[in-house]
Image (cartoon, rainbow, N blue to C red; front, side, top):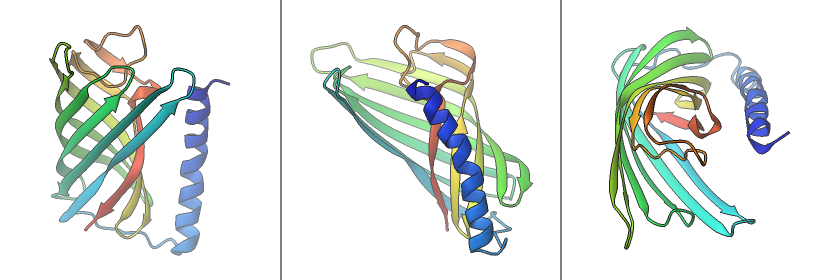
Length: 191
């Protein structure tokens, strides 16, 4: 089993375990209303490739506001660095979130939005990228104000948008993409 399949397998095991823990720890009393709340989340990644002797780092904080139990608005910012492609990558991505399924403690949603990124390198070409599309996601309410969230996939259009693509894949195109590079798992806090 390769590393990508192992990650997907482990994540598929993690969600039911978190649901069972939340149900038993909180007696099934999970937050019922989400509207009128600020949501803060994001991801942090640090990796050292021992074979290639390369290190990489990424941070993508996001903040949003839930207008109703079904609709919210937010923005994700990002910064990444990798020795494999020396330079600094920055990203800004506003989005609209629509929750289309609520069954405590699970919530399924779609994040629709646009994104802009740029890579700045010393002595190399600077470029800009753009994307527009939808990302499906799921949240498990762990307790009031704390959710475990998963996003997996992208449906839309990209032009020179660097998102950790596998070698040999173009950062431009359109369609449906469910690859490990599109997976993000993190916690969201609601205030």
